[in-house]
Amino acid sequence: MKIVILHTKDAAGPPEDPVLGQIERALRVGGHDVSRLMVDESVDQLVAALRRDSPDLVFNLAESFHGKSALESNVAALLNLLGLHYTGSSPAGLIQAGDKTLTKKILTFHGIKTAKFATLYRGASDWTGDEIAFPLIVKPPQEDASIGVTQKSIVRSPQELLRTMSALQAEYQSPVLIEQFIDGREFYVGVLGNANAEALPVVEMDFSKYPAGLPKIASYEAKWGEGGEGKGAEFAGTESIFPEHLDPELERRMHEVALAAFQALRLRDYARIDLRVTDAGEVYVIEVNPNCYLEEQSEFARAAQRAGYEYAALIETIVELASARYSR
Image (cartoon, rainbow, N blue to C red; front, side, top):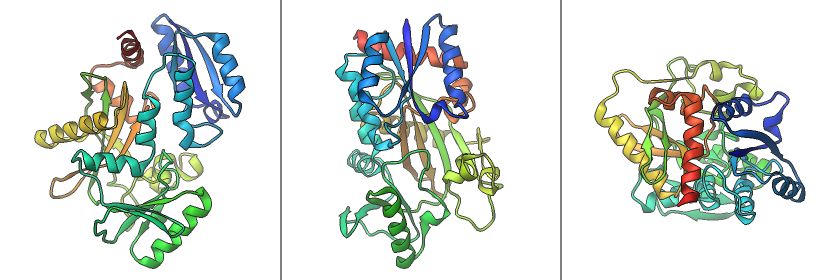
């Protein structure tokens, strides 16, 4: 097929995100005619380029528009309006999973455990009625990749809560999401498929080398390093591992929760579900990531490999899943 890889300006670098070259090579292994197209700031130019290229399929890696994560769903909506076929979730799925507040409301409706929460913005509130106890974690509700999540996001008093809320509202000009902090082990479960979606092997975020005294959270610094440069104590203190001696019943329940969240939010093709498990064995969904990061060493790709999907086969499977949806 003729496939266009659609990506954002920041992925082009410098430095270039390695996932672009990896997916391009994998698609060429599958015999496809591959090109790239960057989402920048002009809708007109994007529409003209897509009409000119007229791809059989768009491999949609665009996670924002004009640098705004909240506009990710609009890119998929534009592809819909142009009648193009594309990989990954629909605008509806991206809206529901991209707004953490909405995600939590939908999960709660479906009986899927998530931390007690509320959203607040300049005196207005959207409170669930639950009693929320400190410590809390405070984050912007429409950012991904742990943007806006730091050690200061964990608050233990009303004074800290107000300071953190004020700082986030000033920086992101949006409501803030406050959640009861769930202490426990953190796991990532990839989901691949549609009608017969499968949960991939469980990956755990290992905090055993995390700096002493800090709350164990996958902050921006822990995921990407200080300034996104892959350095710093939090980055060095975390590692994604396949857990040894994991209780099979716990793994089964995590798979069940991940699949339920995937279906409740009407996601498509592939996603990663982030979970926390308390000492009592309660499984909470802490975040849902449609169109998750597909770099070869990402949690999703490594879990897929463990399930028998070598990288080129994983990318081809995503292409096949998307193509099958449109053929139906």
